[in-house]
Image 1 (cartoon, rainbow, N blue to C red):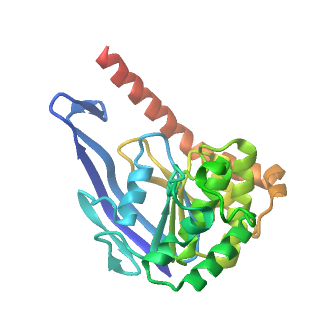
Image 2 (image 1 turned 180 degrees about the vertical axis):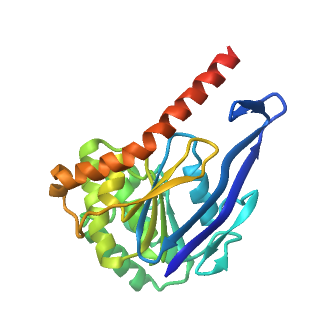
Image 3 (image 1 turned 90 degrees about the vertical axis):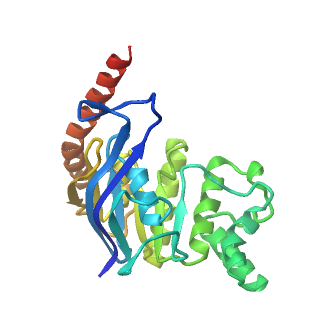
Amino acid sequence: MEKVRIENIKKIFRLKKNQQVSNNGVLSNELLVLNGVDLKVKTGEFLVIVGPSGSGKSVLLDVIAGLAKPTSGEVYHDDKKVDGPNLKTSYVFQQYALFPWRTALSNIEFGLETRGVPEGERRRTGRELLSLFGLSGFEDRFPYQLSGGMQQRVAIARSLATNPDLLLMDEPFAALDAQTRETLQDQLLKIWDQKRTTVVFVTHGIEEAVFLADRVVVMTARPGKIKQIIEIDLARPRSEDIRSSVQFAANKEKVWSVLKEEVNKAQRESEYVAGFSR
């Protein structure tokens, strides 16, 4: 079954009069970010999107979430057209985006509070999620009292508290050190194995994509569209040990072999624009 259906999405940003950008070598004051994206996300799958910088990955997430309107094309969530934010969808951003005046527990409770969930039930859910993420005992800590990894765990827990049926994640571990990033990837998969929430996850990291994904979507250099969808043939549940396997390395190579041409294209385009501006 399909959770999300994306049909021929195009997104154009109009720049100020004195600004120009290269679209396939042609300078224009319109920035074509997405150009005909078609994609189906299966119910309960962990889908990861990779692509060079500027390929529109984050913009596509915003469109799926209903936070940005496409210039043309449609997005459907459970066969209903997306025309704005949806209470069934949660979004985890790169920045931790926690309320600084709320404790860890109170941050997690926020979405439930806005939905009128009784206090006792909110507390129970919040404490369960803190425990799942290894944060028992930190209920009363404010964000400034938590490390970056802890803050992001709270942000993810807050997104899961309302039991969404679609979780969008935009490079949520990008700002973390390598050890913390791998730990959180492992924790996220363990929780996903229990809940089987449909996840669409954006990353620049090929290793992260392969470790997490059922399928990896490779996007082209801007203007972004889907170049190829790669099935990841690694058994679940997955543990840290799989990273050193021959099969893991083969899947990484499979993704990189498709992605590297687009990374090179994006680099050449940026060099062209830099040369023109000088």
